Image 1 (cartoon, rainbow over the protein chains, first blue to last red):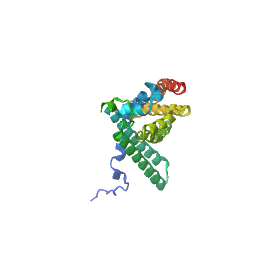
Image 2: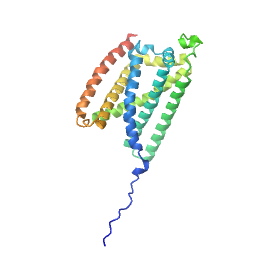
Image 3: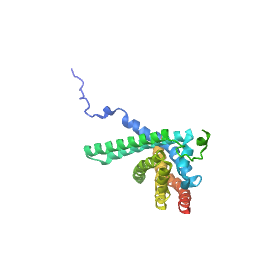
Image 4: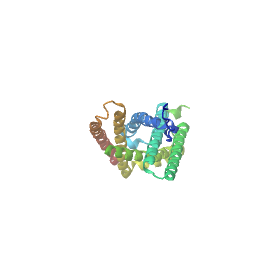
Length: 144
Length: 110
């Protein structure tokens, strides 16, 4: 009586990471589409409208962040751009850094840097005080 | 192939700029004069030219990114990927030329 051949369990460990690579691939497309609107809108409002780059000073930022719309805009842009860039650089490190130790060192540096920038930017947006300048002529500062 | 190389180069360039940009913007938490001194750097003509390069990188990365999304998700995307490269170049010129004229007028016009 013939018995069916048995197959050895696969030795590859591809399934150990679950769907992480698929999810990161999807994230790049989703965040990329959102960033297209967020970043091009940011560049258009800050560099094309008004007096262009000459209009940018403390009062300009205070005027924008007095409005929750621009706070949410900039917060979303910060998180999505940093995570999108971090994931892109992770791919590039995986492609070009051949030695495991080099890859580990570069990725540690990348994740640490990304974390610091996201934390710093988030803190700045949430704790920003448009009226830090006592001579401010902004509406939000005169009402109180 | 070349769009793939350019996508990587522009992506890395933009990502490194984000570090500088978040830190200079963080100066709004120090004092108005510290922030104003930091953004003054961006109004320098030499830096103004670098901004043109940066916006060019952003525009290419954005337009080619749409092409990548279409290749991946649109059923006819892979078949038209080369034609879409030409559309990316065309749209890039249409958007980038007005920006260069506008921004350099602002930077060098004082």
